[in-house]
Amino acid sequence: MTTPNRCWRLLSLPLLSLFALTACTPTMDSMVPAASVTGQWSGDVSHWALGSYEVTATLSQVDTPRVGDFKGTVSAAGIGLQGKITGNVKDGTLIASDGTTIVNCAGQFLANSRYEGDCSARGQDVHLRLFLKQP
Image (cartoon, rainbow, N blue to C red):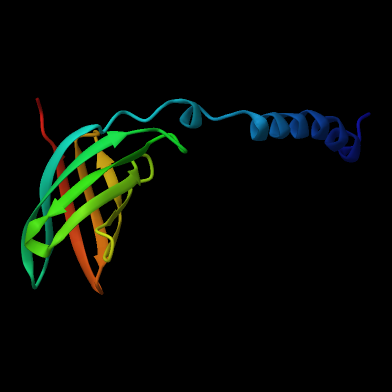
């Protein structure tokens, strides 16, 4: 007859082996490159009290150092921002800077043709929407 302790010992080795293999196996998510967001984007940045301003960006997906990384240029003339933009399509982060002002955004790319995010800059919180221009 098998005692409960003996059953536990018999099951524990295969379970531990399974957990060890799972922890060491790369996930499908880390192996599949993110869909490209390379192209011309346009949209707006809006603030409940300050209004809405046009934003344009040119993004180039580089997938380095992390899969999904991109870089490019951004312009929002109405708020005086013209500079560089970096981010990651997989985690939805964007960072734009004109050398003096840094804009940090957290959001998500939807179907890789639309971005929705909340941003913070100059002590203000704004909402950013970008749409990939179709050729």
